[in-house]
Length: 405
Image (tube, rainbow, N blue to C red; front, side, top):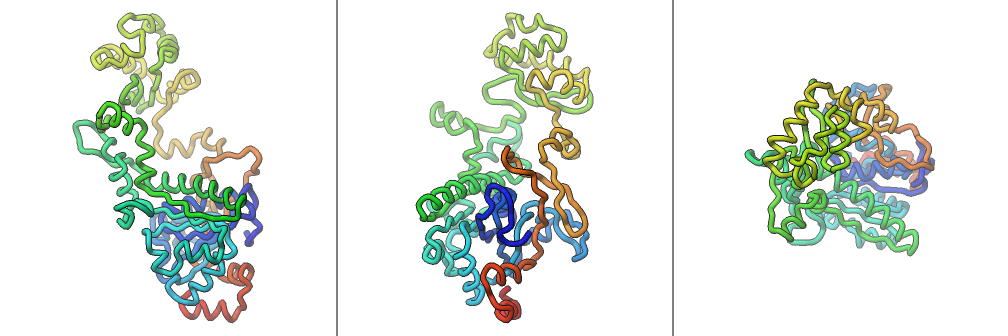
């Protein structure tokens, strides 16, 4: 879609995306999905290396990464070498035209390039400058390099995941990258609202470590109040039962009927309503007690669930109590509820539509829009430099020949 013709609640908002991998690209892509015009800036000699990440899709231009496309759809793409004088000049011209810049370099890198916040704010005082990094822009560890696993490790989440009798296990997805992108999107929109009201931009500083720490539920207050150090619990919960994974005839389910209300409903659904009044397990506190749970509650649930498949259990009880099949990704992609929620969308890669994650944010006033492709490297140089910046064809060609665009 041409520059400034995007639709949606963020239509008219312009974003410079100077990010790579996931923590940053995902933040900018959410803004693009909501209608912002996002211009992704890549070094022509060192582009986003997720362009090589599997799975690859054969297109008319050769193999392209679906991983890259999943976090960069709906964007314009330009190539600029920010270390060159011509690249800096073109970048500063873009900064003057945009509302938001998102970057995920280590703190100090943009300053070394001569493109730090103070420099950019001088040419665009209303600029919202969103910086995502491993440890944030302040504090003794600010200059450390960081990846998703750095955030999981240093934010405490890794130490809490897994089983008590085994070493800790990382969460099985890039939760540090994804959570930092989510918080960055929220902070960016808050700062944009302030800039629209006052004309003054600011820095939005988001750290992967901070983001992961915020996901550790009650671990901090359990330590500060009771000096209890949270550790791996497997599929258990620290203070409610039953609440976890249970086997059934063809796999596993999650069941969380720990309240007295849900426990009574469950007992009735499985033909033993009298168990809700059994004096050994008739309250939440009694059912949580370790020996009672192990010898009475858990065997009862295993007996009930073993008779049925995941689908049968969801059909029987899913509308009445917290009970869900533990689904593999192929089952999730085929889930009709996921389809109804628009959580799997087709994104073009060449002539091939590839099913990818949709946007979890649903706005009642926003019409569903088709999803645009992720940009090829430098795909929109001419359109952006000519139409947005008014550069002459000769200047654009000189930029390209210099290896700077």
